[in-house]
Length: 334
Ligand SMILES: NC(=O)c1ccc[n+]([C@@H]2O[C@H](COP(=O)([O-])OP(=O)(O)OC[C@H]3O[C@@H](n4cnc5c(N)ncnc54)[C@H](O)[C@@H]3O)[C@@H](O)[C@H]2O)c1
Image (cartoon, rainbow, N blue to C red; front, top):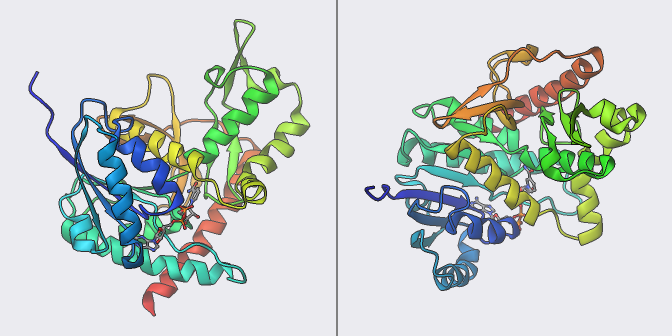
């Protein structure tokens, strides 16, 4: 078989903590395939160029067979030119005393600028994942400023929330992670997200059971389970004094691997993508839905029955996203 064409992959915020774990997974072939050669571009701000020099040395010293070249840059034109995939991790961290709206304003400006850079320099087929928070809204802003790239090529990461939820269910039911399937995360990557197990299944004792039957604890499923997943990021910060990084990098890798290589037959994954109005979610919001993926195209899973409990939770997170988008658009006008 002829060797595959080289692809070009950009990771922003490459000098940060998620970057350090993520670059390993990009370069070793876990995401794009172990037979897929790639050119890697790492973008960060100017003061981090010394750090990136060291990261580049380490990547080269890993002697990965899939990694053809590594470039470190603070220049958007160099970073975004000709890329096939953009893993947008870099963002301003929340500092002590900073209001949510200040963080939103700082990060919206970054994603407006990167949207324009995508529009000008990236391939039109580029696939974009936004990890930097507020991830959903940042993805919407980047898409808005990249009108020459299809909006459906922009997504935000809620896979970490899905992975967290899957682990909670496996631990509660005393099964392995592979025995849990069909967990959905709806909405925003924030504390209003709705981790939903009403369509999920657990393999237990050789039988496939609905999660509600397998757990046999409705109060936990409707209460502490949801709260634990929604606030897991804060729990990690409290324990580690640093935010989730290894798990965020793994989730980013899962998201992009599935986008490039497809979902397993009969399985869906959660991804924040532009709403087409499915499930009553206002069109255009970057909202997490269950999707299946084939030939690098995602499709929102249709026809799931949503009960009153779920409908209410899905609306709360949609309302939050609509407000975030309005705030972000106001910043863009300034
Ligand atoms: N969606 C999710 O599930 C999820 C999970 C965890 C973290 N996050 C978010 O991911 C982001 C990164 O987290 P981290 O722990 O790696 O943070 P970090 O502070 O360790 O690293 C962020 C990096 O981004 C860089 N950066 C800042 N502005 C930039 C710009 N304009 N261009 C390029 N790089 C820039 C910084 O210099 C830094 O190296 C944060 O916004 C965090 O909130 C999202």
